[in-house]
Amino acid sequence: MKKNIFKLFSAMVVSTTVLTGCIEEIFPENSTATSEQIGASASALEAAINGLPSQMVQGYLVYGKQTHETDIAYPSLMLAQSELLGDIVATEAGYDWWNPYCSGNEMGDNTYYSYLPYFALYKFVKSANDVIAVVDVTDPTISDEMRGYGSMAHAFRALDYYTLMALFEPVENIYTDCSKILGLTVPIVTEATTNDIAKNNPRATREEMITFILSDLDKAEIGLTDYTPATKNFPDLSVVYGLKAKVYMWNGDYAKAAEYARKAIDKSGATPMTAAQWNNPTTGFNTATSSWMWYFHPTASNMGNLANFVGHISGESDWGYANLSKPQIARSLYDGIADTDFRKYSFLDPDRSIYDYQSVQGDAWLAEQPNYFSLKFRCVGGDHKTYSVGAAADIPVMRVEEMYLIEAEAVGASQNVAAGVQLLNDFMKRYRQPDYNCKASDLRAFQLEVLKQMRIEFWGEGTAFPTAKRLKPDVIQNYEGTNYIKDIFKINCKGVKPNWTLVIPKTEVDSNIALQGKNNPDPSGAIPTRPTPIGEYAPGNN
Image (cartoon, rainbow, N blue to C red; front, side, top):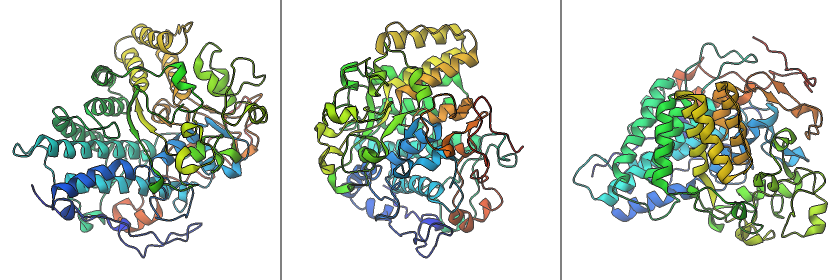
C-alpha cells in the first residue's frame, strides 16, 4: 500500500484567513487526520471510511462551532438547492436560514451563502482524498475489502465534484454576464495536489471535470463489483451506476444516461416508495425504505439542537427553526399535483378535504398550520420534543425514483419522445397516480413535465435542481394566489434565476491566482425591482 501525505490547498489550512464583509470569523484549521496516518493500519483506514458518511451530516462542519445555521454539511446543500428552485415557502422568512437562495440576495463572494457550500464540499473532497491516497484500487495485490474501501472513497468524491459542478458551473442568462467563464467548473483537488499547485489551480473546464468524475466512477466500479458495503450509508455498485447517469445527464449524453439509469434500477433491486411509507406520521422520510439506494444517518454525537436537517425542514419539530418558519410547498407546484397523486397528501390543502391528515402534534395543532404546510419529513418515531431522538433520521441521498425519471427523460431525448412518455406514464401510473396520462409530443414540453415530477417527488431533497439548471425552465414566483408573503421573493425570471450559479468565495480567489478574474458574477443585485409584475419576467441586464 502506498503512502502519500496529502497537502490540502491553501485556503483550507491557513487559519489566519479572515473573511470580509458580513463574515468576521476566522476559518478554522480542522483537518483531523492525514493520509499517512490513515495508511498506517487497517483499522485507521476502516475508521476513515466510516467517517465519510458521518462527516456528510456533521453539524457545524466547516467552523466546528455554532457560527451560521446553514453549516450542517450535506443536508444544507439539499435545502439550498430546494430554495434555489423556489419550491420551499416560509411563513416567517427570518427563521428560514436558506431564504437568500430563494430571493437571490446576499449571494456575493464574502457571504456564507457562497462560502459554506464551497468549503463544505471541499472538506468532503479532502476526506475522500485521504483514503484514495493510500488505496490504489487497480493494485491486484490488495484485498477485495481494501479495494472496496478505496472504491467507495472514489464514489464519495464523484458525488462531491458533481455537486460542485452543478452549483458553480455558470449557465448563460439575461441577468448576469457569464460570457467569459462559460464552460468552467471548479478547481480539481486530488490526493496529489500540493500547496504550490493549489496556489495556481485553474477552474477545470466542463469536459475536464466530466472526464475526471467519470474516471472516479470507473475506479469505484472496479472495487464495488466484488464488494458490497455493509450498509446503504455507503455507495454500492448501483449507486455508482446512478451517479454515472446523473453525470451523463448533466453533460447531455442522454443515451449513456438512459443506459446507466436502467443499470442502477436493475442492480439496486429497489422499489419506489409506497403511499403508506410516504405519509407515515412517525417514519415518513426519516426511515430508509427499499427505494433508498444511498442515505446518511446523523446521531446525537454529530448534530446539535439547531444543527440538524429535521429541525430545519419538519414543521412538526419543536426544537429547531421549522416550527417557526413553517415550511410550505410553493402553491404553483402544489396545484400541479393531481388529487389522485398520494404525494399531494404531504401538504395541507386549503380546505383540508382531500386527505385525513395525521400529526403526532394532534388535530388542534394541525388546524393552526398554514395552507400548503409540509408534512413530508417527520420526526423520528414521532418524537417532536427531543432533538437527539427526533432528528436522528435517515437522510436520502439517492432514491431509485430519480433513476426512473432520468431514464424517462433520457430515452425521450435520445430515442423518441413517445418512448420517453411511455416510461414516464408507466412509472407514474404504477407508483404515484393511477390515472396519470402524459400526452406530450414535443421534447421540450416532455422534459418540463419530467422536471415538474422531479420537483414534486424530491421536494426538500434538492435533487431536481441540476435538471432545472440544465433545462432553464423559467422561474415564476409571483402569480395570482402566490403563497410568498414578502415582495423580496416575488420574482419571475426568464430561463434561470441569476443566483443558480453560486460565487466562488473571495478567500479562495485570493489564495489561488488562477481564479483571479475568473470568478462567477455576483447575482445579488441583478433583480433590483420587486415584486416582478404578475405575467412578466424581470428585465435582464444583458
